[in-house]
Structure formats: C-alpha cells, structure tokens
Image (cartoon, rainbow, N blue to C red; front, side, top):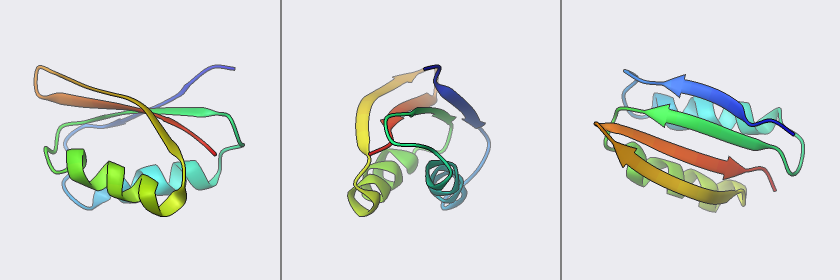
Amino acid sequence: MADIMMSLRGLKCPLPALRARKALTGMKSGEVLSIECTDPLTAIDIPNLLRQTGDILEDKAEAGGILTFRIRKK
C-alpha cells in the first residue's frame, strides 16, 4: 500500500490541519498520509488534530524548514 503524499507548503494555520483532516476523512483504515508543511505552527496543530481524530502519528521530521508528518489512518 503506497503512501498518499500531500504538499501543504506555503499554507498558514489553520489550512494545513484542515486539509489534512479532509484527506484523512476520505482514507481507509491502515492507509498512510505523508504531508509536508512550512508553517511552524503545524508542529502543534497536527498532533492536536490527531488527538481529535484518533489517527496515529508514525513519524515527524524537520529539514530545511520543511516539517514532514507521516500519519496512519486508524
């Protein structure tokens, strides 16, 4: 099963979290969403979103001002 990739670069709070939520809503259990963001507030927003949805943050990384999140749909 391939990851679903989304670039949310350049979007400001709350748009990255809202778009991630919309993407997760359309996914099946076990699928993985990988998102790239440039807004530093996503380091707070994405974990908060996952506490609400119950989905799992598998990995979080930062390199060159880009935050990458790997989320598994519950």
